[in-house]
Length: 138
Image (cartoon, rainbow, N blue to C red; front, side):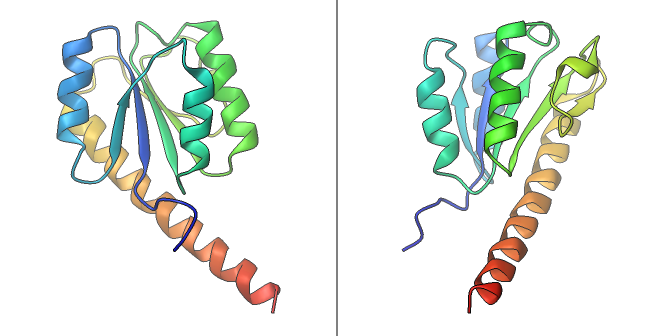
């Protein structure tokens, strides 16, 4: 049994809870969705440590939150396959270099498609890297 889950963990940070829950429901076929709770940062970090790849999906209203940016930067520095998908950020330099930025008016279907595709790419990269490390350790 592997110590990590291969299903991506997606933390949705949306101002509108109904939108967030709807999005989590729509991505449930390829990911494990969670509502963001700013008071549970340690739970967030513990959760992303248990998954091969993890995401933070941030809407435009939360894109300027400096504490959220700090958590994302910390997670990005500590976890190789953690990524952010930020919708409508005014200043993209405040987010980690690996963050993906999309326009504020992007449709939810485009967001979900991008998240699905990028998650698949991360899963493949993680698998290749694990395989290479196993070969190197022989």
